[in-house]
Length: 353
Ligand code: NAD
Ligand code: ZN
Image (cartoon, rainbow, N blue to C red; front, top):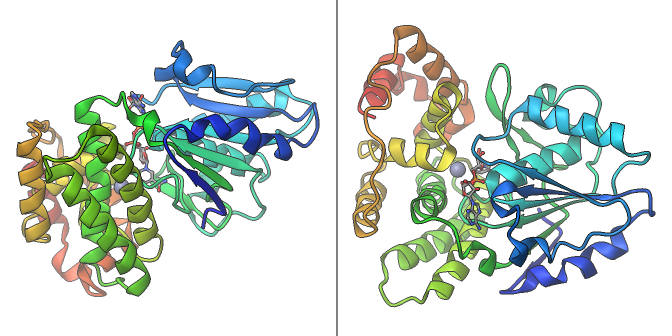
């Protein structure tokens, strides 16, 4: 679990106070990995507390993080500084937070990040790392994974060293998120809840967080009486609780299939989940019905026909990636999932998207 968290509108202003006791020495910088959407946005950047040799890397979130990108960044940091950094601070959405988590792990662990994709393969504690979400929904701020696309698979580095040491939850930072993206990433949280609450791995721990996150999502996506500020606050807490819910259970059909789309077509996590979930009535009837209601209420159009022109070989790649995520299928469909989820069934579902 994340060991320290602050919450509140404007809490981003506390970052200097939070970081200064963590500075190892003047040669050990804090490295800020910041979404390049904020480059030139002084409302955010002027509040990043830089001192000594601290550095900001502005990074695009147009594509989801890759293992090669993590390795390049780690190499650059090692070559540029005489000492290991005092900490890595990720400021952005799931893409940037995952990059920050992965870099902090790879600065202390040998080899390439692709070698650590899987469960509990990390040997040494990461360096101090802080997550500051600027868009809500993924739960990346609270989870024990960092999802990376590698040469062979899209899979997280799941480990006890992955969670942030500190998180700053300032809902005000999410105020300029574009509407479609707000919906896609917000629905990631809603889908986490549906997949967790309807999974065979469900337990009292996951259920308590999942139910709260679900309740918050229904309220903020369907209630007309919330102010923008209230909706931002609630979505940030829904994201946190949704992430906590899957920490002790698992996601399900939508995520497994969305990983396939992401790997082959580069479809991003939030929108990919929405495209898949929209076709999953058979598995999550009530959850999908409510999803459609939310989508219509907010006039969200989803891309269509994205699998229409794929070759058999491409379908095979996508299906291989989806089927490799065994824990997700077992959570969704039980121990004997292979009987129901065949390659033909997956292809039939993908063709609807
Ligand atoms: P994102 O980080 O990819 O960002 C989406 C878009 O929103 C980008 O264009 C970004 O620049 C923009 N944006 C972010 N904050 C903004 C702001 N305040 N104002 C204006 N624009 C803003 O989005 P995401 O959905 O948060 O993250 C998706 C990533 O998270 C994927 O890589 C996925 O694999 C990962 N993920 C990780 C976990 C985990 O537990 N580690 C869980 C789910 C998803
Ligand atoms: Zn997700």
